[in-house]
Length: 233
Ligand code: PEP
Image 1 (tube, rainbow, N blue to C red):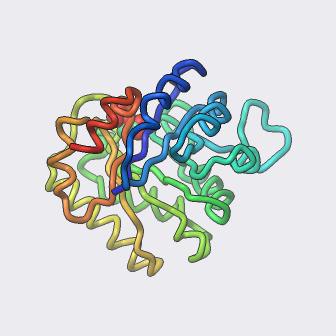
Image 2: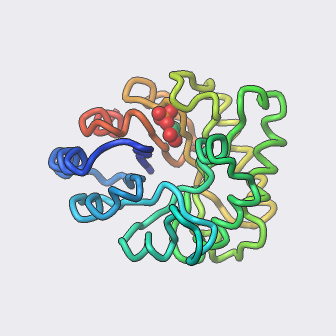
């Protein structure tokens, strides 16, 4: 299974070192990656036994984009994955589906992309239409070979960092829907992760969902022991 950690805007260099002093001793066959802030990528790559990813990437690959990080730089730093379209990027940095699409177009030919989609609380009644639009717009114009590099993270916005989660049946149905529409449109079998308030206590129930490929974990990935407990649960 896949267990990806999103550290958001957390940790100092010292804390990254301390985390991997502990977590590097964890022996597991599961697929793990940590998405860290640009300022910590180099430290994390040097220190971690596990792959490191970028939390965000500019929609352009170089030039006059002050404050941004490019896919060229992320690959140069040995990032092995990029997170695209996280709900915090969409809500706090006004990223539209079209901007998300530009980023996937730029990154997917070169590396794994974790494309985040999910409905807000207000959109719950139209969840499937919202997801379909987010997915089809984000993946517009991407060749089949590059699509194989894309993993979908289904993250209901109302579940991120709130302690709330959908019922397991709702997660199963939503993952079924995502896989089915993508298979029928692109003839590609996409992996789908669930994200939103997953922790070491509730993850065992979610692991039983037959079509789930893994998890994107925020808060519970920040502490080495709690992330290890979650993976082992
Ligand atoms: C996230 O940031 O993608 C996330 C799922 O956060 P949390 O696990 O804290 O809800």
